[in-house]
Image 1 (cartoon, rainbow, N blue to C red):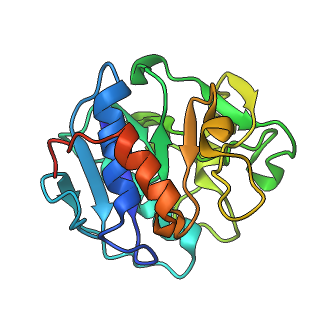
Image 2: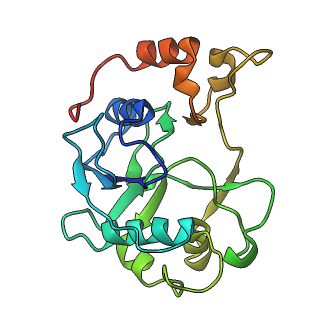
Length: 211
């Protein structure tokens, strides 16, 4: 199964989090295919496949959906792909083909449907289904295409807490925060903390094939 990241204009193209995210996929994903980055061309992983985007819309959700549609209409990407945020690092072995659809334990999806799927874990995208959704990037209103997609196609959902690494004083040690967790998302500038940088350098020391 192929992997798709979206790097829009708000994010730096040389983010180290993306480097560690791909290293973790190569370590833990049993059915990993090619890696595609839609949007900005990432300097930190120059060998990842790149799909350029002009991001023509005014709202963030519209441009994000536009970028995912670029992946969903690309002939070379697998019929289902794993969409993953560049700040998300997997922590346990898994297969993309049967990766669960996790939803937030609290809060509904509002105008996007019954459940809220806006977590930082990966999500499986079926290309045909995604392009058949009744909302499009130029639809008026405010939507979350990820949550809308899962609700519209009735993805079997499993409640989960989001796992976002806490940094700074008076927080639990990194090992304690990540114990038995399937994934973690790094907040902005987390890798600027020397302790966090050292932790992931030790956890994922082997350069990926895209570096």
